[in-house]
Length: 220
Image 1 (cartoon, rainbow, N blue to C red):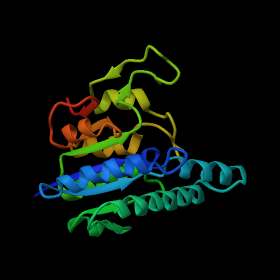
Image 2: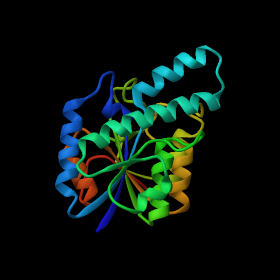
Image 3: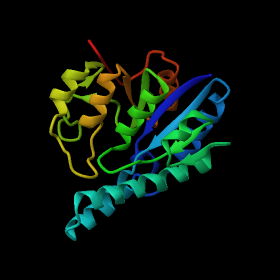
Image 4: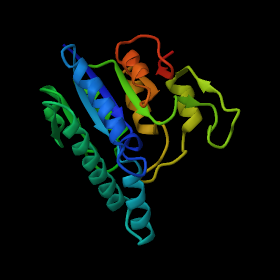
């Protein structure tokens, strides 16, 4: 059985309120594919994390403390996702990824859930990670601010680092991928498939290694 590692953006789970419709469609996809694949799903904090981090930052809390808030938010989202998936288990321990279908959140301060998903792939020897977001992939400019932004179909680790380097390093950054996750993927040659997670048919294509709409991040 093939292992599939998914970094599931928290904004898909809770974009400002729990998205029950998405969670039903996502879980139906996972449940329908479990005879062929074993899933390890790392869930982000999304809006829940950002709102709490923003308020605590105003209170003068340290970045370490803010990271801990973010980790708790990711775990709340992960526990919710787990409740939708049959026979999955929620875990906070990386050692549990070797058995069964596992849903987890953050692990320790300084690591985003994208970085955690890359570490999971390294441990399992998986050579691709599905990064499910609320956008269609990686753009050359912020599509929210630039209507003419171009979707990048294919990009190297180095070019992506040049595009996003130093964009944000504090707790709760809201971007497609962060520096650490790209560097982990680069050192182990893990292909990252960035997709819009709401398109379930496209999601399945990315899992199966077929042509998909989104961005492939890989070595040259």
